[in-house]
Length: 352
Length: 253
Ligand SMILES: Nc1ncnc2c1ncn2[C@@H]1O[C@H](COP(=O)(O)OP(=O)(O)OP(=O)(O)O)[C@@H](O)[C@H]1O
Ligand SMILES: [Mg+2]
Image (tube, rainbow over all chains, first blue to last red; front, side):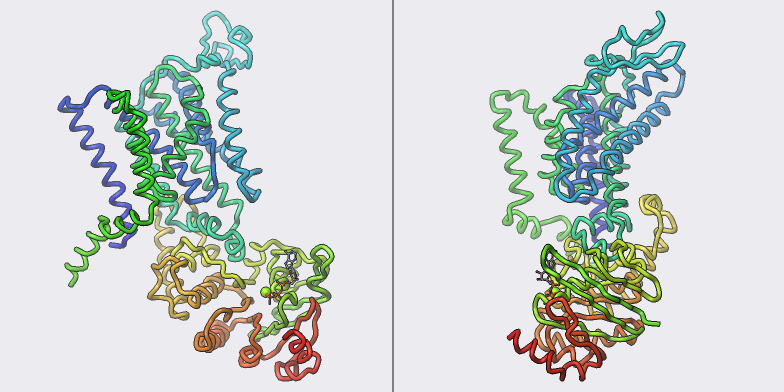
């Protein structure tokens, strides 16, 4: 078995083990309701971190508006579910379509932003995505969409200007967002989407397209010299990354009754937060992103009990993670005592 | 018909005429040398041939096809591959993957096939690996196939660049100072390898070198460039005995 395959199996293994433990704990009733409430968000933010790592670590471009793609996925999927809420469609089928739709629309926006920006050299993507995230959030806040027997009505001012008939329903209500979204998100679906996300990223990276993306990241001029189409592969990686954020958004919105676009969930501080997960987990390292996102999503909630020391402990954890992942001495230590090495040694002994 | 036929090539950077009225004809299977003092414009010629810079004058014909003004990516597909004076490897990729990137356009399974690991992915990846390993073996790099490219010693990085260029299956191979920074032993070995590539792959090779002795050892014909202009051109022995060439090199020292 080669090193890469082993590495990937460990990643899948960690997630499946986490799922099994949580399901057992929850079945035996030993999981607090606080912790239960965190299970879907953990899936959402790990998917966000993995997908951003595709842009930052594999493609090597800085994106500061990843929450914007999540916002698009959240609203598009929630809108879809609201439209079909009373159609009698199976809720799981409806949710799967909602996730795919959220992912697709996010990918389209990824392409629209990527086409002009990814052609430029330099950190333009960071600036444009930052602006994009804020614009999306603000547009959603003035967006009103209603549905009646005449079809859809759209307005950017208020509910009244939708000119709806009496029995029409307003679905998107500007700053109040979408209310009454069916709670289709479950921990199981979240884990499945997470596993799919990781499988897609890992398989992409190990295919010719992924290699082309990394070649461009490592040396653009050399990549051109061996016939790689730069724009095509940059755009592809960015669109895949955006679509995964869209899927995460769908999980997020179907975990709420009331979806609103606010600075704290879809603003640039959320984009930065996701970037922090990626950096702390190690740029380009998928498993690192997952672990960092999971720990840093759960930790602040678990620390609510120690409210006086909460931020202190949180900062210490951040610093420790940073040292663990980036300090040369720690890297050496990890190399020495890593699971891989221990496994590797065992295997060699068996061979001998 | 010549493999490469360049006439009247020229480019300026601001006021500097880096290459002026440059013409060159290379026959198929020929090992051709481009020499000249520092800053003569040799690398600029390579950049013009590969579309990194657009020539302001001149025509480039590759194997009967006009490729003047095309993009780098397209020119590689037409059949020109190169190495760089300042090594440009994909540093964070393995040695094997560096060569596989070179094979990219010959094994065009789709992205979806890659993500879903469809049979076309498995089949083509298996062939790619085999081809890449074959190439690495030519350069004695097969044992290091799992190393990161950046972890190779300098001399081997130069060889890996040549292997990657060959992987694109070119008609014409451009080598920019392939022996730079190598010790005399490594250089000798490299020259043997270059000759071997020419014979084994029936390759046409244009190479830039500083070391006159080395060039005279393997190149059948030479062009000497000085201040962007052709100073002398022809059979290696004739060129090296040309008084203008001797003067240019002595004056350079
Ligand atoms: N992109 C550029 N912009 C401006 N000037 C350039 C550029 N590229 C090359 N030059 C100039 O053109 C001239 C020729 O450079 P070039 O790199 O082709 O020389 P060279 O013969 O390869 O030299 P060396 O032996 O040092 O590699 C130099 O004066 C260089 O400064
Ligand atoms: Mg040069």
